Image (cartoon, rainbow, N blue to C red; front, top):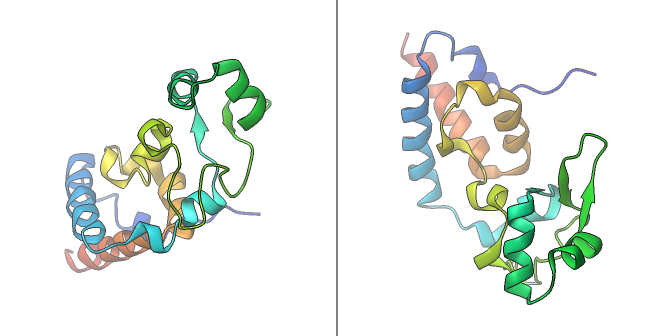
Length: 152
């Protein structure tokens, strides 16, 4: 089955990577200025973040335990060696959609949804997938379609 690729990527070939990064950052700021992530938290409810050894150490320190204990209790490693949290929804998400380890959260969570992070053009699959998870990303990409399709 073919992977979903957001329609915005039909319009990205004519633009430079730098132009797209600037547009993505501009729209990210605009959309997230009016977005209440706590009302949704779908990212935490449906997509376990990739975690690094550095993330695990930071979480362990925050929770006053050992990295080994964090790995044993919360982390799973896939066949390629990539690690992520093993629970969906995230075991650190509380009933009000707050992250109980917010100060020590993984880098992938800190940077989510990655639209503002640069290399927009090279992250087709990531942004397309995130648009299915995050209503704000869907809005950003839809706004990009409007801007790029009328810029011709």
